Image (cartoon, rainbow, N blue to C red; front, side, top):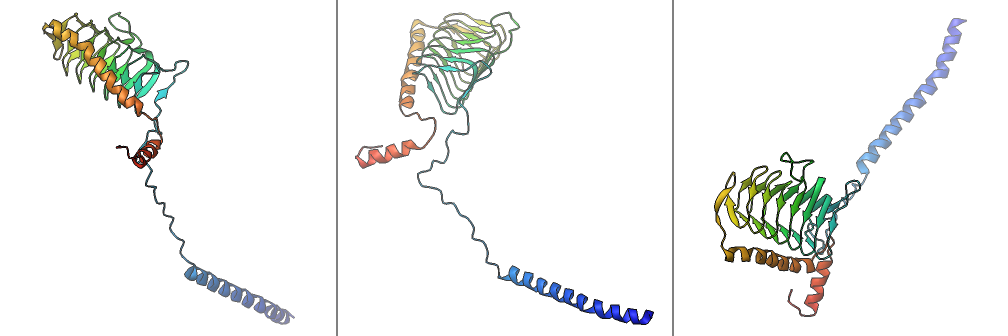
Length: 257
């Protein structure tokens, strides 16, 4: 009885196992054929347009509000595209802030007066409070020229002054009117530079008294930079490549670009 049942079960299982093996074999062959005969996907190549600018400033925010404070820029003030103005910053009429400068008014006020200029790569900041007890805000009054790569922090610069390139003015320092600071000078905290004098060095020291002709040239320099910024302002575009279309249009009219 047992032997007969084993024979019957063996006869029933053998066809099902062989059919499963046959199905697996054909499935494996179908997958192999599909992988070998599949056409390679074409590579997507993007050809950049000839009118596309290599770089623009859309990735950088020029005006950064902080809380309730929004930087204020006069209508006729020139602020370069890659300048950063943050927080309590006021840029008055006729002034200019040049490429790469950062005016960070996150802790206190920063004021750039009439017809003054902050040149390339300058950093202007203000502290919470000044250790000297003087105002912690940074004030750059009218007709002031701040040379490139200078660092100003919680200082006061009175009207008609020149700050040389790579100068550092620390907390509570005061530059009185019609004074000149030589390039590379460092003004320690609380140091006062009297009116009508030339200072320089690290730390800054008195060099000599300015002549009347030299003091008259100080506001002329600020006015000249203001006129130069007007040329930039007329061509200023925050972003886009519209200027290329303008150049094409000028060329079609025979106007020299």
